[in-house]
Image (cartoon, helix red, strand yellow):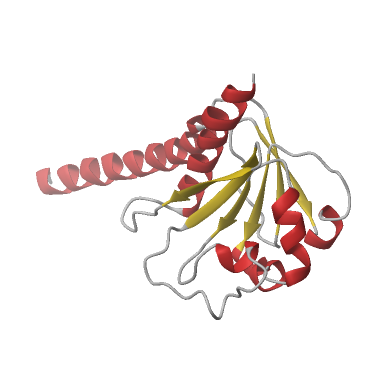
Length: 175
């Protein structure tokens, strides 16, 4: 009888811990970015998770490269890389005045997108950051690389790192 009660108590405690932990983890992502409100353009079909003060606008690269939409940053998701590699977007990358991040890089460098004579096929590299980005500023291109720790960094956490980076390095410096 004592063993049965002890087993029941252990099961209740374990179930209680799991529910609390799951709720906390979901809310934690919301709370990890507490910076300024960000308007982020997203190229690709991946629906991104809600994060703090971040508003997404899903856009087509062909449309955004032709109009003057203003974002705090643009994120190009991995499923849009083949399109983003088209030479017709190099001019857009040279002139865009907000940061652009390529999310989910694995085996090639960002310059596959931004240089006229480079493609995904001829820019292979095994030591690539998971997120590579840039901002054109005062005639120069500032680059950023965010590496993913496979054991700790989920895609969601990588997004939060991007948003914190934007808030700290771009919004704070332009205020």
